[in-house]
Image (cartoon, rainbow, N blue to C red; front, side, top):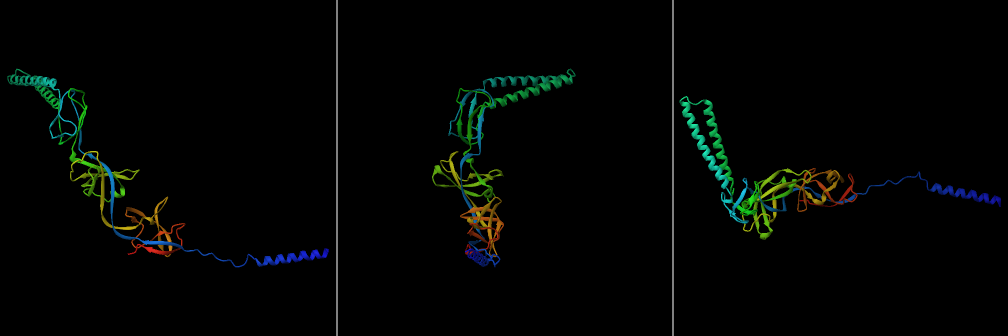
Amino acid sequence: MRHLLIILACGGLLITGGCSQGTDTNGPKKHSRQTARLVETVTARTQDLGYTLERTGSLKARRRVKLFNQEEGRLLALHHYEGDAVNKDELLIQLDDRLLRAELDKARATRRQAEENRNRIKTLQSKRLASDDERLQAATNLLIAKAELELLQTRLEYTRIRAPFDGIVTERLAEPGDIAPKHTHLMTLIDPSTLVIRLELSELALAQLDTGTPVKVVIDALGDRQIAGRITRIYPTVDERTRLGRVEISLTEQAEGIREGQFSRVFLSTPARQRLTLPFNAIRRDKKGEYVYRVLENKAHKTRVHTGLRQSGLVEILDGLESGNQVIIRGFLSLKDGDIIEVLESGGKE
C-alpha cells in the first residue's frame, strides 16, 4: 500500500508537468492593430458671406440742453410747457430784473462822469495845468466805469433765457413766482431731429462696419414700418472685459409719432464678400482656444484656427486653413490627434 501511494504521487507530477508545457508563455504573441475611426468630413471653401444681425436700443436726443439761471431772483414768466415746440432765440424764461436795471442806470451815470472828467483833465494838461498822473488816473477810472457797465448789461441779459435751437420742451421744473437761486435747473429742451440709437456690438462685428452704412430701424410703437437710418459714429474704444464696442445710429427719415425713449430694433447688414467658411459644428474648443481636425494622409490632425463672423450655420475661418482642406465634422467621440480615420461621407464639395 505504501508503494502504491508513492507511484500515484509521481504520476500526478508527470501529468502537471505535461499541462504546463502545453501553456508555455514563451510561445509566439499576437500583435494588436489600431482600428480606423469612422468620421464624416467637409471641404473648407470660400463663398460670399454677409453679416446680418438685430440689436435693440432706445431713441435718445443727441442735442439736448438743460436750462439753468445764472442770476438769482423771482421768476416772472415761463412761457412754455412740456411738448411745446420752440424756435431758436425765442424767450423761454424771464426773471425779475428791476434791481439790475437800477444798477445799470447808476453804472451809465458813473461812466458819463468818468468820461467828462477824463476830457477835463486832458484840457487842463494841454494848458500845463494837470500832471501825467492825473491824466492816467482819469483814463483808468473811465475804463473801470465802462467795464462795470458791460458787466451789468451781461447780467441783465442773463435774466432772459432764450432757446439755443429749434426744439421741444421736455421738462418744466419751475413756475412763475418761484424764487430761483443761482444755477437752478428750470427747463429741458431737446432737438427731435437729432434722435439717435446707441448699440453695443462685438469687436468682430465692428470690424465689418463703416460710418455711413445704411440700416433699417423698426420702432415697435409705430408698428412694423421700417425706417431708414445709417451709422453716423463708431466709437474708438472697445470694452476690454466684454469686447463690446458702441455704434451710433441716426434716422435719415422722420416719421410721425417718433419720440425720445421709444424702444427700437435695428437691423444691420454688412456687404457680402468672399470668406473661407466651415459649418459651425466643425469647430472644437479647449483651454487654448478653437481648433479643427484636418484630414491628412488618412489621419486626423489637430489644427488651431482663428474664427470670425458666424452666419446661417457657417463660421468664417480667418487663419489656420486654406480653401480645399478636408475637415472632420462628425465622429469626434474619443478622437485624438494622429488617429487613423476612415471617411464615411464627405460633404460640402462643389
